[in-house]
Length: 353
Image (cartoon, one colour):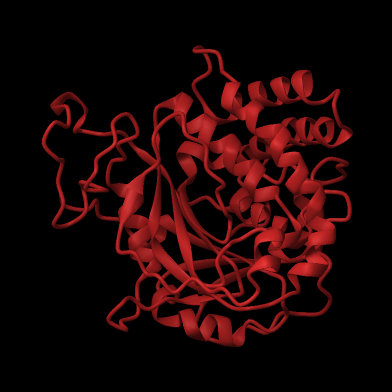
């Protein structure tokens, strides 16, 4: 199937800057990023100006920009990796690709540099197949097709809203797993993409993702902040919570989520033993929230990502809010985020992109 043509002007690449010197990071990505507009959001807790090499079409957003757009709020926090969501908010492009600043382009099994941007866009512009699993993976990739027995009535697929890439070297383990396997590195480059079946949850990671902003943009939000949350990926589950929300919403709206390619190469950093002290709260909470997401249902009358998120916020408040203030705050943040998203859209942002 021929890929839909995407103009470069339809794409924003969002980077959450948790380090001040982005020179080596951006130079490594230059062959892939230089054609596109970059939205770089500086962690509000990071002091000083960012170091950005020349040759990139970019816009840097700082704490003052965030304060100008968001205004006073008690439920939305953009510190740490959550600052990336501000980039999602101010973008006006159809497609957003988001890569953490500790990731580099990956190489395939033949040692060739892979193009994470083009692969994400290929995933998003070819149909997903969430209602019947194709055992030959993504049937819309070159060289693949539907297997014998796949219903012809389902072969047209549905729109793909979210592309979840993977990681070489430092896999996205939780702190307990990484602490038990400190030397383990993911060296397996699997040349495959698949649609995650409808009704199946997954721990979506914000490290390497892309999405159709028009379809699900409002459903990617900073909603769950742990007490004493840190600056390392081990020390937060904000993207896990957001990911389960967006997967439920995608299933409800009959749109798809793909996972697999593209890979990025993640650099080693942090101490999983120390991070475990901060993440343990999130590890325990996961056991409580999975049954909720497995059972939550949205009204059939709800047909947009914004309204889906508001309905989920009601369910979170009613079913989880009484068990822990953490969830009550998350429900409040979900409602606040929709208000901010609609307000920013109506004003088209006074900052521009």
